Amino acid sequence: MRTPTQVYKDTANVIIDPREVEASLLYRSASRLQAIQDQWEEKAKDLRDALIFNRRLWAMFLASVTRAENPLPKEIRENVANLGIFVFKHTVVVETNPQSNRLSVLISINRNVAAGLMSR
Image (cartoon, rainbow, N blue to C red; front, side):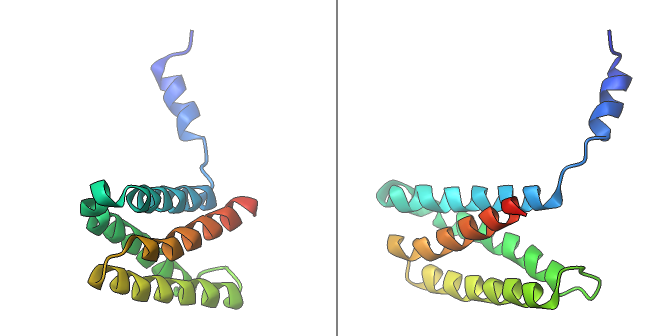
């Protein structure tokens, strides 16, 4: 029988791929936004929190890709930064004039970037 210490050590040695974590968070955010879009009448009240979560997620990506020590190629870092800026601008559009159809862009971006992260 394994002791709790052994189980802990085995668990601590499991390394989670950061890309998988990022993809999971993007999918989570996309799912939240999709649920709001699909049930707009009932869930529109949750829009603000979902947009804040998504904006914070993209703020982390922007902070990461703009660091000088980021190992990604410059072109990829610039593309991610440009997507992040677009997400911020579009989020303001959604916040100032909430409409369910405007969420599609954010949902699509999150899902596509997540799929790209998972395929690497």
